[in-house]
Length: 109
Image 1 (cartoon, rainbow, N blue to C red):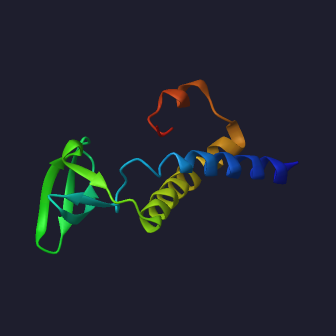
Image 2: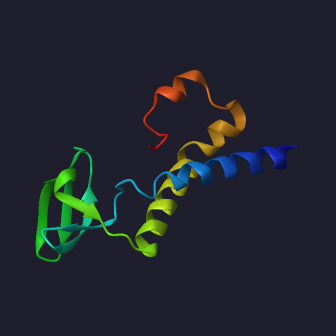
């Protein structure tokens, strides 16, 4: 029974992680002013810090767009998967999803 429960939560986390693919995530490649940059900081979302070898700049989400490549999508998916597995998997395995958790900003868009 425990293995089925673990499988359920892993599949649930995989489903949630797919929501991260189209959102902005740390490490994503984005196009800003016709150049490819990497998202380096997002604490002040919707303003992000973009990084390149030339330096760093801050830009609003409206000023850049995500690069649509399989590598970028895979990176976003694995970011979500690692986040849920390290932060929530154990809690959900033992307690399930409590009502207060639904108010957290962890569910993706």
